[in-house]
Length: 374
Image 1 (tube, rainbow, N blue to C red):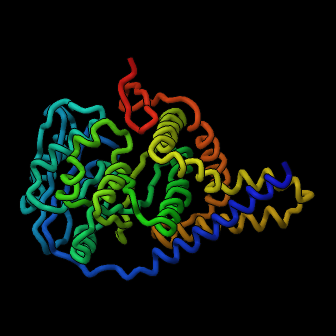
Image 2: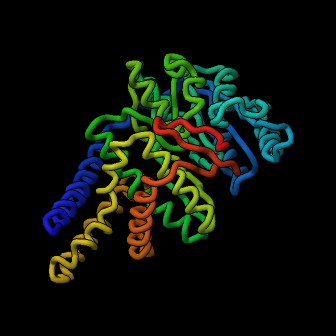
Image 3: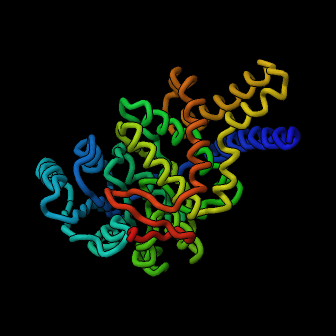
């Protein structure tokens, strides 16, 4: 047992060094020139989230030399987000924008239903699909356009995201995990096996690549449609990349109950989307493993101190180096809390197959699809 614990601890330390190497590889890529190809921004909306108007405003304020448009989708004309969109349309009359009322979803995944209708209405070949809680700078379209112009076989691209939390301790720890743990896993996967997937709340794609996989209807029953989209597009011979453009993901300030339910849903979904990778996530939370090994060292403070410094170094590299975030001093106590919570949710992800999403209960199947609970 002792030898096994030491081997596991060694594995977590190796993983930390892999992250540092992956960060260096990502940052060493020379960004493509700014582009001007035509782009449609697709925004599926439901309700008025905290900061929605400012989030959407950031898309209206793009400084882009190419042709572009914004297309919004709402299930109902009575959705309060409609008023927010219409105010911005009046405030920015020179921006081409449209609002679609797409009706109640015909698919298990309501977002996929909206994206299908948005793609049908889009007038440009390249689409930027961004959730309502995303905020960007005016350079977004210029950067991603350049990346797609530089590679005619680029089918999809993932925009890494910097999570911005509200005042809740639980949302702050989750944001810390996104900015240090989640992005680290993406970077290591990219380095070891390439970007054979897409993740996150902002994905850029060619419509022809989406059509090549059978359109959005092929993703209608998947909970993690973003991840599966990338997988299917790559299988069809297209390229996938991790963009050089970082978006802001405004995750709000959920309390303990909602935050924990969200994180459990994410864990259960991830386990079914990529089972082997999920098992490998054991090594992405080094502090819990190192704490288990620490008593075997005779409680040498130097061992734990060195392990903590390595973990903080990795966190600084991903948060500050890749995401342009600020690794605040408070993170020195929040990071261990986040690692322990993350390890707990990782374990919980192996149990249960139900999730709560948008006020409804669903059953997750082994292949990553989901259906309403009877």
